[in-house]
Amino acid sequence: MRAARVWRSLLGVEHTVVEGVDLEPDRDGEVLVARVRPSRSRAGLCGRCGCRCPGYDAGAGRRRWRGLDVGTTRVYLEADAPRVCCAEHGVTGAAVPWARHGSRFTAGFEDTCAWLACSTALSVLSVLLRVSWRSVAAIVVRVVAEAAGRRDRLAGLRRIGIDEISYRKGQRYLLAVVDHDTGRLVWAAKGRNAATLRGFFDALGPERSSQLTHVSADGAEWIHRVVAERAPHAVTCLDAFHVVAWATAALDAVRRGMWNQLRGAGQTTEATALKGTRWALLKNPSNQTGSQRSSVASIAKLNAPLYRAYLLKEQLRAVFETKGQRGHQLLAGWLSWARRCRLPEFVDLARTITRFLPLIRNTLDHGLSNARSEATNTHLRLLTRRAYGYHSPNALIAMAGLTRGGLCPNLPGRS
Image 1 (cartoon, one colour):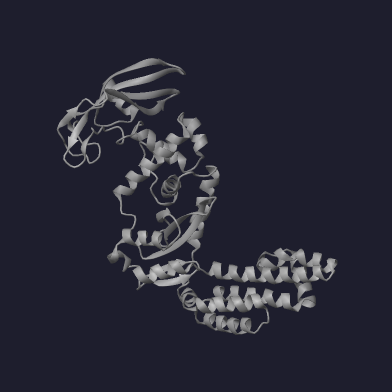
Image 2 (spheres, rainbow, N blue to C red):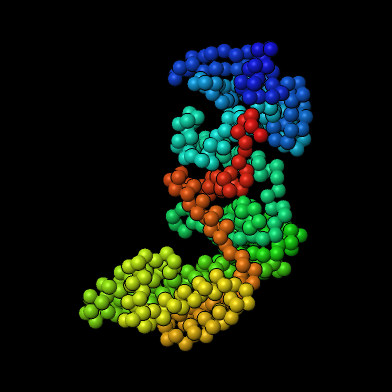
């Protein structure tokens, strides 16, 4: 077997001529430098579009690309870096078969780096591959951009979930769109307003927007407004979790009000006992401990208004567990009870639910929730915590596309 073929296999390159390999001294020991050039069929191509173009000049001369280590030895590929004159992109660097345009790393190195970035922190990855964490972040952005350019992530959308997530302090948000059928993140952008969401529908286009059948969202009315404007045939469903969360917040507000009344009246013992019942009231009955169930039973005997608020919260939760026509009947009964319960917090909640009643009825009929969007948000929080925060939303969006958008590349040499 020819030595050149062996080296091509070790370096993980194709359409490449290996002219020679040497060990050169470096500050950390020795590095392996392979002198290469593109094969004749891959020479003189535009680095951006891949079209064959006339040569322009020698560029900056010879340059190096970092490759995957061979054993414990760092590897560099060295070659000429001429420029070509493309009819579409003007004067630009010629394409090389072993690396992406504008990168200082081979494609195999970047694919390995991006694959590992899905499972480990950038700081750990930078030590393992002996590159800076900023280089890792740039590699992820490049790999995701190339993978996204090869496929239409918005094709075939029928049911989507829309939600926002804070990615940094200072009210900085991302708006994320998830495909309910595949569970993948299909679009994300900085911001959480109508203009940001219109950007998604602009990318989707009128024809594909008209093919959407269901959209799930929280109580943000600007989302409902834009969906009705751009996808009028889609059924908008209000996320059940958020509706029950409103009831949970109303229940806690009732408890706090009673606690303040008891404390203001000097009944400190009763106030202390009531303060300790928070989690017993907020938990679902199936998750309560024995002592928490005893606390709820004590409230049922001694504090009728607070127990009424607890029952209102539980019945609203039962509405969404039941769904269908029976769910509609339970919801009507709940609204009637909440309007006359003499608890201001739940009277206000009844008004809110009445305002969103058509969307809640859609949820009961179609059973669609924002669970996949919330799972994606949880994953984005994990990515943020693992990286100790992101300065740029683009870096987080790229990582999200890599891990939740189906854009992670295979490891080199594996299908």
